[in-house]
Image (cartoon, rainbow, N blue to C red; front, side, top):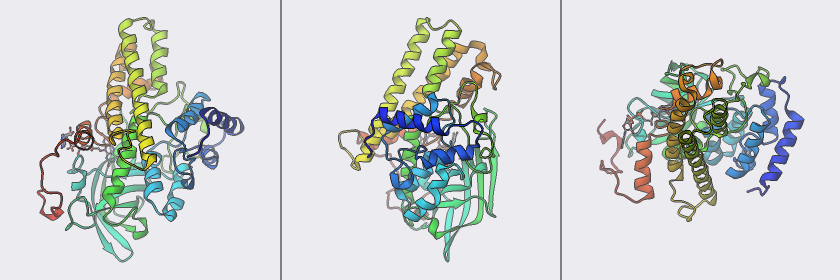
Length: 422
Ligand SMILES: Cc1cc2nc3c(=O)[nH]c(=O)nc-3n(C[C@H](O)[C@H](O)[C@H](O)COP(=O)(O)OP(=O)(O)OC[C@H]3O[C@@H](n4cnc5c(N)ncnc54)[C@H](O)[C@@H]3O)c2cc1C
């Protein structure tokens, strides 16, 4: 791990912004500059284009990007999930082929895990992959695929060996989305956006070189992705004052980067970050509620939860870096705890939005109070307790793996998939 102090990191990020920020250059050029300076996903290992920074070091750099009011790294699941998964489980060739294009935002990824009958019971997935020479033929249906319509690649898990027990017969692929047999249909949610999609796959093809991990080893790799997801969900906004989306389909790459700076910055609607906390204080001041003891008490609770969550994420990262379990740094379930803490924050932020904005909380869009940012957080608030594994499932994992409670009753783990009830 690199040993720069937060002050040194702030200085080097500030120097980078002084030299490189120009609102007139394209989003693609800005991200290329950030990536060339290894300031996109700084926690990734050096060989994967990062700096191997700890959570605290990465936060110091992200904070500068937000404070300097520049656009942050590419948003989306390539950055959050695919890059760290490939960096830790991919071959050197796969890392060289995929990760740089995630970091400079030229390619985007989606997560093809959930199916209509397999959400919480993800290992029960039915999508099948059949070997055909150097390729695998994929057939099945995925659902709730966030940003699937804009993605170049999918992190796809499929059943390659149905005779094996369900956790053992799954393989993880880097799946090209733009090919015959892949039909992506958007699903509109109550924010008005179509964040997620259903994806129908009919005899699509993927080369064997795109297997991430080993054949039959997909469950282990998928769990790594889910761990990054939970810790990422609990970890808050990834830095920057404005945000843009990666990949050619969404059309942000060729636009001037300065056009992605909103009046009030950007927030991740699924997490409470520094911007959200700042918005509550700004609005309370402007609306004469800053001295209301009940409001102050709730906002203090939100700050405390936010702090506990970020410390939990740091503990989780420290344990992961140590490469060992039960180091005393944590109980091995910090990612799950961080996700539950995220839900508590989102629910409190939802209530505070009503308290501080009053009737203005009902109006959405850029012309509305807070640029519509807090209002969108409220409409999106039912989602975080569900995605990345529902909160009930997190509690099961904490109970079983963290506290050593007995497992849920069910068929023996070595039962072949073909013999399980569907
Ligand atoms: C906004 C959003 C974005 C998403 N994006 C993606 C994505 O990009 N890619 C992807 O693959 N998936 C995505 N998902 C899907 C998400 O991971 C699943 O919705 C989630 O895992 C739950 O699965 P399910 O919807 O099938 O619910 P089910 O598994 O059917 O669960 C229904 C209810 O039963 C409860 N339950 C189920 N089993 C148990 C149990 N054993 N113990 C206690 N309670 C239980 C659940 O907690 C839940 O309340 C997204 C979901 C949302 C809401």
